[in-house]
Length: 546
Ligand code: GLU
Image (tube, rainbow, N blue to C red):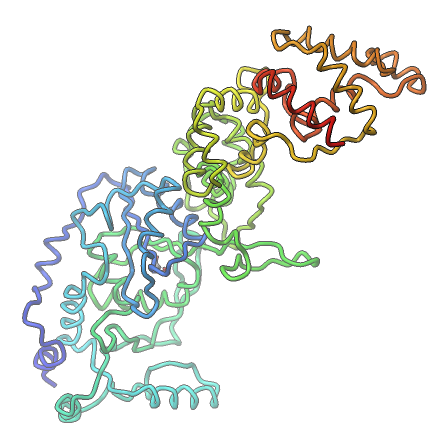
């Protein structure tokens, strides 16, 4: 068989470069020893899974802890799965979570183009070379023929796929091939495997450890009938030419690893290292069983969820780090103020089996992260969230910067002995502080109406916004004394039956009238922020609407 002639017939493109051209153009990177070149290679499906960020973070840490490079490649070869605006979803999610790429889609770089659609000629050049060397061939099988083969294999309990005796087009004669071409039959290009499924070897996976791999014997499709490469082929060509040193990808690709090992070999490429990452799981059902975090069932599987809820990106990243490396938490406890970047990330410490997602833990971390911000940083974070997701009313909160900063300073306990940890997300924080902007609609008091009225009237009679905390509390005590509540807690505790309650019950009434909540930061300061007029209005309204 004249393979070269066949290669010209199957891939007649006249504008392909010789392979040396690509090998020189995308020369090995000039990086220090040990520097890792990692990549993120999402398909633009319009959906970004939490797992995408998980892998992104691992890749980012590996590259940047080693003085290497992280790049972004958009795997857009599957036109059926393509969704309008999907690339923007990828880019904006990664930007929001602060994954810093050194090169790739949108920013460019020396190893581009970074959109696979734009690399069609490169794949065709390498496919043509495989054909010319007898390592790839045209397959004219129709869908019907392929499913008939599959059926036969299932019936006989044989390994499914296109291989050995089932690889009908593998041994077509020259005449048959040219006759098919002359008849205009559509064809795909398949790899000609030389593997033997009876041969097994040990492969070191950077995450899973040593695993046994069976040789590939499948003649997988490398170019589809439209000339576009499959994942397998594009992966080999791109990760070689972009000089990736380590491929971290979902464990769903583990089953294809033998194909990739053989493909890299046939192409004469050095195999990168691989780490197959476990999926993120959650506990589901009463039996405590685990299952994969599902795009369909779990809103928290989507990165959009965290943005809509207003989780701080650092909280999500910090939480994912606890899932990624088992020793991260210990490090963080030791150095709570250090940036994540200083943690020595190690791929060997990534979980071998599913990481368990725990929303409560994310919320605890979120509280901590938010409580470590300055009031100004919190202002900016909330404002950015409200711009995108807030209601018209919430957007208004930001019109008086000074006022909101006073609110945040109080609610976060900035300057106090201990920071408050009331805020979990931007959405929840804005709801929590809404009483600074709007009187509570129907404050719910524990006390009866008459008591509420008496307390509000009495206290507001004496209220003076110029009072400091001590003077303010004295007046609260006087109100208590006047209405039969104990102002002295000791006295109350020794004979509670002598009182209608104590000073904290009195303060609660004022608090609920002002804020609608029984628990808030310091009420005296809240009243100062609200202003005298507004406080009197709220007290009067509460007394009236009982
Ligand atoms: N485009 C593939 C995916 O989204 C990438 C797998 C890989 O990282 O190689 O699953």
